[in-house]
Image (cartoon, rainbow over all chains, first blue to last red; front, side, top):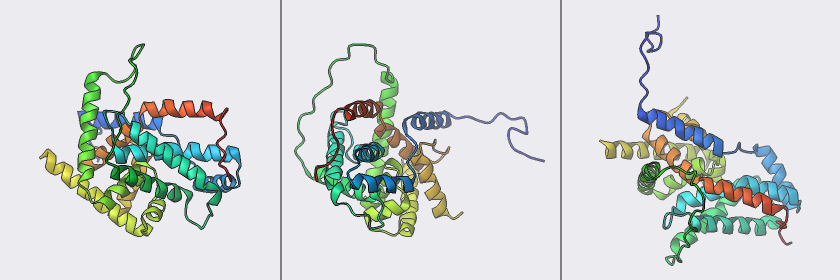
Length: 221
Length: 62
């Protein structure tokens, strides 16, 4: 005999948090395209290195959103916008395109090569203390289909909280989590970028998650 | 499954955009950040890029 809440006739408790978490999943699932299979990506890379224009475009189409997300996660917003992070992401893509003819497949995943470049570009941007004025968007001419002001503020607070706690992690742990979740790199690919074995990545990311969990629990206590 | 394997599976699921599990603040923080950096503006930008591809050569110089 089961004692589960549904079988026992008790309605499961659905908290506001669980509904919000489900909403995040639904929104993300519609925005994140399915990742190209690793073997397809390898073949695409091989064709792109040979100068196949279609392969280059497909490769860029696959990697660019992941590079944009990584740069945004590392650099954050300036004056409420992601202009600087997106500019850096564009620089990464240009650098990848420039380096493509010289790329040789030595068994290292191409994504690791790309995010090695991205990591350096982001570090350069972080070192640069001069940040130019950010142009504001033109005033909207029509109705705004985005979230309302209340939802925007709640999301902003949540994101800033996430950034604040992530910033308190050691550099390698933070980089690991961002590469795994935001860039969608595998443990192997992440290890290639950071010079770690896949096993070491799995241990370190487990510790990073535990530490992040502990910090969040302490803050909410 | 070891705790390390569980964490690995959790990060894979978050990267695919799956909702964070209830009661895991670390997973929720990462999901919130991922959602923020996967903004709608980016999608519009990507659509624009797709249109530009038809008229601009993306082939690198050799």
